[in-house]
Image (cartoon, rainbow, N blue to C red):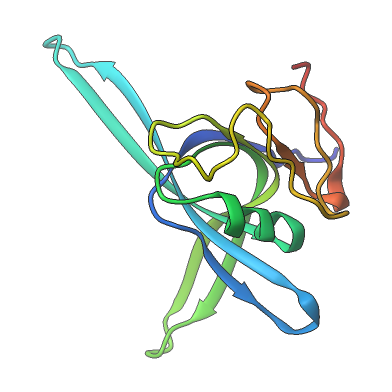
Length: 154
């Protein structure tokens, strides 16, 4: 039986993307995404619980992130969980979970400036991004070429 490794997140960036340009025109962007759940506790007090997610985007998506995303940007993300393992300077085994982004959609945000795309007006050029059309408030959407499947009904 095959397994499923799919993550869907909707949140805001906690910092500007960290982008590295590597050899061979490879580009990687690392993002910190906050998702906040709000609920009431037994006493009726409103409680907010924020989770932070480390996102990794490559090549065309990383270039789009570098150009259009900034701290406070709201994005919808689809991806998969990946783990990094390494040994630290003291020989201890370390492990970190991150989300390998397969597609994302930029959404409206109060903190987005006038130079940011609005209502789907700015469509970045390049052959690594595939626009999904007028989905999610008509904002541009970008999918990874290696996994263009979208099995969600919306």
